[in-house]
Amino acid sequence: MTQAWQTHDVTNQVPPLTDYNLYATDTALQSAVTAFGAGWHAKVLHRQGARLGEAEVQAWAEAANRHAPELQSFDAQGNRIDRVEFHPSWHALMGLLRGAELQSMPWAHPRDGAMAARTASYFLHAQNEAGALCPTTMTFASIPVLAKEPTRFASIKDKLLAPQHDPRDVPLAQKHAILIGMGMTEKQGGSDVRTNTTTATECGGGAFSLIGHKWFFSAPQCDAHLVLARDADSDALSCFFVPRYAPDGRKNAVQVQRLKDKLGNRSNASSEVELQGAYGTRVGAPGRGIPTIIEMATYTRLDCVIGSAAMMRTGVVQAIHHARHRSAFGAKLIDQDLMTTVLADLALESEAATWLAMRLARAFDAQASDDDSPRERAWRRIVLPAAKFWVCKRALELAGECMEVWGGNGYVETSPLARLYREAPVNSIWEGSGNVMCLDLLRAMSREPDVTQHWFQWLAERTGSHAPLRAALAQLHGWLAADPATHAARARAIAQQVVLLAQAALLLEHAPAELAHGFIESRFSNAGGRVYGVMPDTLAVAVQRAWLDRAFLA
Figure 1 (cartoon, rainbow, N blue to C red):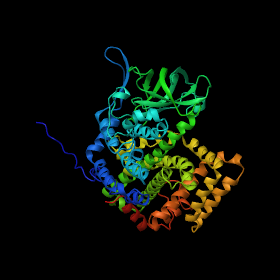
Figure 2 (cartoon, one colour):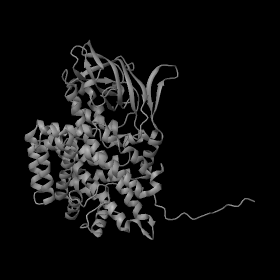
Figure 3 (spheres, rainbow, N blue to C red):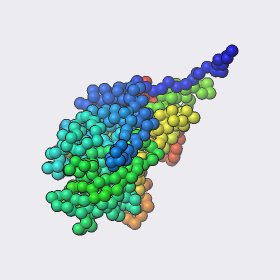
Figure 4 (cartoon, rainbow, N blue to C red):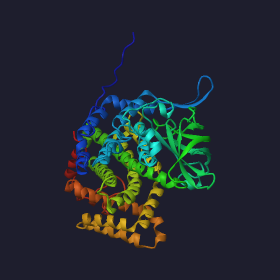
C-alpha cells in the first residue's frame, strides 16, 4: 500500500496580484491626467486599468513571451514567404492596443490633452506587456512623417488610424489595418547611421530599388517599413517607404535572415534582413533621410520614457504587494523599518518618473496647439533626451531591487519580476543609447540657447526657494559655462542634473509637500545614497509609510 506523504503545510505565500485596477490604484497617474488636460479620458482609463489587471490579460502577456515568434522562411511548396508566426496571445494583446488606439489617438482624435491621454493609456498597457508596444510605437511615430506625403498618406490613412488589429499577411490594399516598422541600423555602424551602405537606385516613376542590409529590422511582420538608404546618384542618405508587398502583389525583395534571440522583449520579433532590389518610394526631401527619421525617433523616444516609467510602476506595485502579504522575522515586511525605507525610495523614483513622462506629453500637446512656446520646445528638445537616458537607466536598477524584495521567488521565471528584469534594459538601448542621448542633449543646448534659457527660467521659478535645488542649478550652469571641450566627458552628469531638477520642480508643483521635500532631501543631499533605501535621517519612517499608501492604493 502506497502512503501519501504530507511533509508540510504551505503558508506565508503571497497571493498573485490579479484582478485589480491599474488606474484606480495609482494616485499619481490620476493626478497627472487631470493636471495635464486629459481628465476627459479618465473613464476610459478606469476601464482600461480594470481590464489590464484581469488574470486573463496577464496570462496573455506571460504566454506571448513564453511562446516566442517563429520565422517561417518557406511555405510547403518551397516558396520564400518570410512569415512570422505569433502565439494567439500576441494577437489578443495587439487587439487591446489597437482598440485603445495607442497607434493613433492624437492623430485620429486631435484635442487638448490628447497626447497626455494617450500617454496615460500607454503607461497602463506597458505595465502588462512591453513587446507588443514596439510595432504600436513605430506605427504611431510614423504617422506625422507620412502625413507630409499627401498622396501616399491618403491611400493608407484609414488603415493607420483603424482601431482594429489585422494580422493577415497580405498586400497593403487588402488590409483593414496596418503596422509600420523601421529599418535604420547596419552591422558596421549601429547608431552611427552615417556609415550606412544600403543604396537606392531610381527606377523611374518615383520607384527605387534598394540593395543592402539592416542589422535590426523591427518588426519584420509590419506592412511597411521606413528605411534609410543612400541615393545612388548623390550618395546622400534618404528615407524610403518599403512595403512588405511590391505593387505587383508579390512579396517585396526583403529577405529575413533570422529573428534576433534577445535577452528580453521576447514576444516581439526583431530581425536581420537583406534588401535584394527591394521596391521603395522616397519619403521626405532627397538627402534628408536622417532628419526625417529623427522626427519619427522623437516620438519613439517619448514612448521609451513612458515604457520605462511603466516598468518602474510595475516593479514598485509588485514589491509593495509582496511586502504587504509576506512575513519574516516575526512581522510583515511592510512593517519593518528598513524595508519601508527601501520601498519608499522606490516609490519616490516611480512617481517622479510618472510625472516627468506626463509633463513631456504635455509639451507634445502644446506642439499641436496654439499654445506652443520656446519653453515647451525645450521640454521636447532638451528634457526628452535627458529623460530617456535617466529614466531608462533607473528602471533597470529599480527592477533588480524589486526582485530582491521578493527574494528567491523573484528570481524564477514563474515570477513577473524575472520578465520585468529582462525587459528593463531595452529602452536604454533602443532609439539611441545613453551616450547618444546625452550628446543629443548637449547638441540641442548648443544649437538652441534661447530655448534652453526659457527652460532654465521655468526651472528657477519653481526651485528658487529651496537651497539644495539652487545649488544644483548653479552647478549645472557652471558645467555648461565651462570650456565646451569639457562638456562631452561630463554629459551624463549634465543629463542627470537636468532630469533630477525637472522631477523636483514637478513634484513641488503637483505632489504632496512632504513627498516633494523627501525627493529633494534624498536626491540632492549627501545623506542620500547611490543605492535605493539609503535615505536622510530627516525623513521619518512614518512619513515614508504614508508614501507607500499613496503609491499603491490597497
